[in-house]
Image (tube, rainbow, N blue to C red):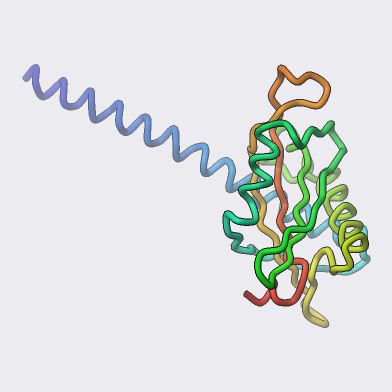
Length: 180
């Protein structure tokens, strides 16, 4: 009987650890979904067009260098600030925008201000580098593609000893990237 209790205790610890890890992934997925929905609202505000954002699959060659810059403090942002750059991978062009993640990121209303700043930064980056910034397809049902990654830990701009969380938005910036 003692052995059975020990085995059950070990199994319970395993289940609890697994559920804890799964909970983080679920929370991030909800936050990413809310950020996408907020982008749709922001796009309507900035461009006057209704655009549906769909998921874009992005390789690590695009995201890893930006994640490293966030982690090592090369990218430091205050609330409301954004960082944007163009990343080329082969014949594909991406617009990457980083912003501070809002508090309570699983609520869409908390993403509204951030999404508006992200949209404007992506459009401006497109003007700077001569791309579309965000590639939009369709005449009636317009779509764009984005990959949102939340909960990226980096340094706080006002106090380097503190940690802040960032969100990275990777947009398809040209037709080749959109249709990949």
